Length: 317
Image 1 (cartoon, rainbow, N blue to C red):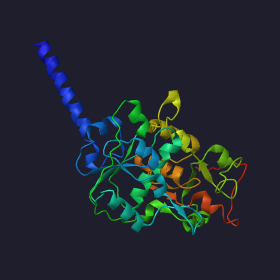
Image 2 (image 1 turned 180 degrees about the horizontal axis):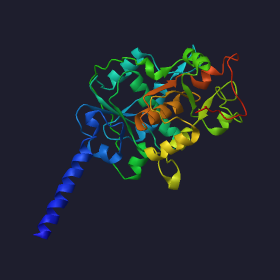
Image 3 (image 1 turned 45 degrees about the vertical axis):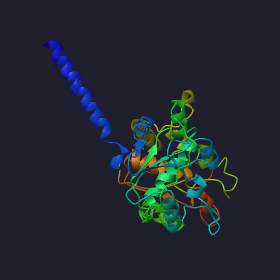
Image 4 (image 1 turned 30 degrees about the horizontal axis):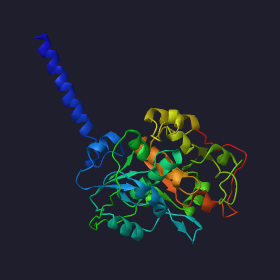
């Protein structure tokens, strides 16, 4: 009797566990962070498109089964008018995604190389761009290609030939900050500036070669994207740190706990800031996050705009 009761309880727990695993599945469009384990079981899920944001050469060498290619250079191409990387126009995004077989109802899973934090930021920024184009049904593969291959999972060289989709970009301007928005916020201080570059770039000791000036936007908090993943820890791939760790770091750098706080995230080119957006909004639950698309590449060009060097940014709580 006792043995039968234990067996019954164990079966019930296993069934409940299976249900809990299947509920957040990306087919529902609700899981922003999906695991390699989940994706391996759902490669053939209907109405799902897996997008590889690595280089075309890496894609050709081997990719996840069924994945289509849209290299990160297509997500943030060079813009001659602003002289920096900027997200494509809605029309261009519409055309590219339709060619990959994406429909308005498609669930998109994005993956990157997943070896370094910079790799991971490509996938995170692609998620931000998709959400900025009005497509919320998008997920990020935790650990990317590196974690997938570390686990000995199948890779493929076959290139799918998808039917043209019907996706149409519907831009959500609440997720994108412009230079005009940034300049206005210098006066109003309505939003917190969050700098996702390295500490040495934020402090002004170093800068990226193509950024004109050193330093950070006044009153910025520094939360380097390198801190947001486990990349390199015991040779680990770039998996996103736990929400508990991220929240502890957010407290440490001075981010308010109020999830309605308005935050403008920036870096050099919006790539790292895109990952910052993804972590803040889709993992930590901040509801009012914008990424400054032009970031320091655009801002630093205007020498009339203030930059702070040899100092740490801060906010007063």
